[in-house]
Length: 409
Ligand SMILES: Cc1cc2nc3c(=O)[nH]c(=O)nc-3n(C[C@H](O)[C@H](O)[C@H](O)COP(=O)(O)OP(=O)(O)OC[C@H]3O[C@@H](n4cnc5c(N)ncnc54)[C@H](O)[C@@H]3O)c2cc1C
Image (tube, rainbow, N blue to C red; front, top):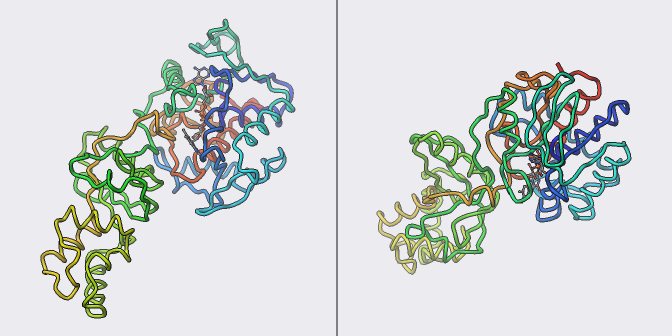
C-alpha cells in the first residue's frame, strides 16, 4: 500500500482484520506519517460527522459516493474508533471529535491498531513508480524495488504538499492506465481584490452569510455558514466550501462570481418588506444602528462607507435609491475573488482519479487489475465538517475488505 494517511491506514487495518494471511506493507514517503491527521480540525481532528450522505460531497457521481459511504457508515466508524480506544462526541454542525480533543490520540490509536493487526509500516520510503510485472507489480522506491501481488494507492491529493501529499500518486495512476480529472485546491481561503473590498478593515470579524456562486451568469450553488473576513480576503467554512466551485469554473474558463447575502439568503423583496416595517416601527432609528442589528457593527459601518451612504440618516428619511442600493448590497454583497490561497492552505483537493474508473464494491481499478485507489486521490471532495475523513475511512474499509478477500480483478 502506498501512503499511510487516513485512507491508507484504514485500508491496511481492515485488510489485516479481514484476513491475516497476506502480508500488508504500508509505504509512506514521510518520516512521520499521519501529518494531516495531526493538523486536522485545528489539531482536534474532526473524525467524521453525525450525518454523512453523498450530498456532502462534490466531484464524481453521487451514486458511487453513496455506495462507498454505505459500505462503512458513520455508526460503524464511531464503533471502530471506540474499539481502538477513541471515543467521539458531537459538536455544532454534527462534527464528531475525539473526547480528548487531541488529533494525536486519533493517529496514535490508528498506528497502535495497525501494529496489533500485524501490518508493516515503512515510513520514509517514497514510491517513485509502480509497474505491472509477472507476479503483480514492481514498485520502485527510494529504498530499492519491491514486489507486490496487489497495490493500493492512498497517496492523497495535492493539498498541504509539505506533508508529502504532492500528487505523485496521480502520476502513478496515470501510468497504470487511469485518466485524471484535473485537480484544483478545495476548501481553500479566498483572496479578494484589495481595492474593491472591505476585508482589510474587517479582518477578524465573523458572521453568517449565504454565498451565491454564479457561473455563466446563473447561480450554480448556494452555500450557507460562517464567513471570516481576513487580511487577504475571506475564510471560514462557507468561503472554504465555495472555493472549489470558483476554481472549477476558472479551470473551465467560465465566468464566475461570488456574492454574499447577509440576511440568511432572503430575497430582496423580503428584506425590503422587513426594512419598510422597521421604518414604520422605528422611524427615528438611524440606518447604521438598524443595520448593526443585522450584521456586526463593524460590517455595517464598512458596508455603508463602501456604498457612500450616510449611516446617520433616520429610517424615515432614507432616499429610495439609497435604500434600494443598501438592500441590494445586503442580499448580494460582491466578493471580488481574484484567487484562492492554493494548495498550501487548502484542506482538500478536487479532481483526481475518476470514480467511473473504480469499482465501488472493491475500490478496484477498472483500468488496471489488482490496483485499488482510496481517499483523497479520487475525484471526490467533501465539504467542511468531517466528510473528507469519512470518505477516507469508508473507501479504506471497502478496499481493505477487497484486498483481504482477493476480490481484485
Ligand atoms: C489543515 C487541514 C485540516 C483538515 N481537517 C480535516 C478535518 O478536521 N476533518 C476532515 O474530515 N478532513 C480534514 N482535512 C482533510 C483530510 O485531512 C484529508 O481529506 C485526508 O487526510 C485525506 O486522507 P488520504 O489518506 O487520502 O491522504 P493524505 O492524508 O494526504 O495521505 C497521503 C499519504 O501518502 C503519502 N504519499 C504521497 N505520495 C507518496 C509516494 N509517492 N510514496 C509514498 N508515500 C506517498 C503522503 O506522505 C501521505 O502520508 C484537513 C486537511 C487539512 C490540510
